[in-house]
Length: 462
Ligand SMILES: Nc1ncnc2c1ncn2[C@@H]1O[C@H](COP(=O)(O)OP(=O)(O)OP(=O)(O)O)[C@@H](O)[C@H]1O
Image 1 (cartoon, rainbow, N blue to C red):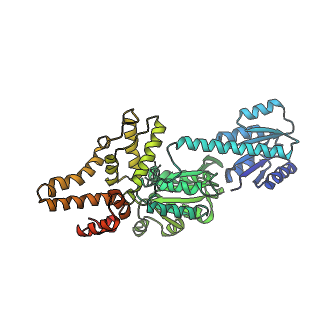
Image 2: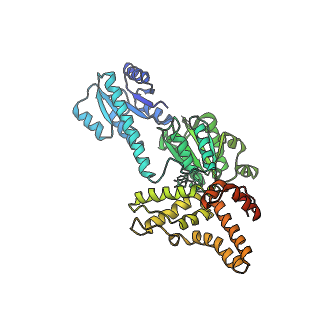
């Protein structure tokens, strides 16, 4: 994505000169000759950087005044000041008002390019840093090696480099946002912004203001999510929760790549890739008149399904270890391991809150656990819901069938329950189950058959 630079100078030949130098280097440029035309351009779309002359003849505001106004509205927009009459005081005044740097006319093309490069790099680093801080615990990698997750990764690899829209389906906490981040990070827009908007957590009447921004008396009062995502990716979470009128507006942006701010009529043009996510079945929402079918087709160019954690239990140990390490490091606690029994309990729990719930549980264990890094995390340190789920599996056969049956039946009852748990731990993968329990694969198949358990997927075994 070419960076979009706005050049403001009252002299046409200087504007052309700067614009020529920058465009030769692959930047995209726009020009303005005074403060009013500059403000108009900014309203059309927020540029990535501004090159601003201090002396603007015939302009309502001079360069320093315009700098001040722009900085109150867009604090992070980098501005490079230019002047032929510059002295050290003007330079200091400009920097104090928030300019990134100052160059004097006449200037060398190389000097201008270097300053522009530094300013955009500084802004990129600032944004990256802010994003890193905000999302310190967030990863841009999907942890897991199960077949369903490898499939997700495969789709991501294929789609990331394109500009196609992606609709991510999956239950709450399964990793839809992480998947969207991975797509963005692997795309050509990776250096552009990744903006998250959650339709579920926004008040419906404020949604349009948040998405499209607000304009009052010709001035921008609020920059919306679409404008902030220019050159990058907009991730719309729980897209089914958008009210119908907002859906119509989003459809227009997707068709025209343009919109108007609330209260304004300036056409804002943007280049944004939209990735959306839903935990609801959109086809049902369409049937019930709650979601626009035309919008669904626009968003669902590439569908991506993130399976529930219980459909990829093999990933649980990897995820648990990953969270144990990263969360211990982030909180300054010792890195500790789980006992086999505790890990087995995590693998047989039904995880209604998916990976998010697993992460929260591990975080609690890491924070509340003892200081000694050699002390393993036992099953007793896990929350009661996780413990009781796995205890139930064992108690049923101990208290019920086993103790009141002859040995042969008791053994079979135990074997049946034991194998059900093990096969479910390995997401129905017979080879891995056999390797873990120390049996030949063919022998395990025979055993399952003799116990009346279908030897296929975990779902077949009830
Ligand atoms: N495969 C994964 N590897 C590492 N971390 C993960 C993975 N999947 C999910 N997470 C973590 O689990 C938490 C929930 O993930 P995320 O927010 O992506 O889920 P979601 O499906 O978007 O949830 P919701 O539908 O509630 O918005 C996050 O903290 C995320 O970092």
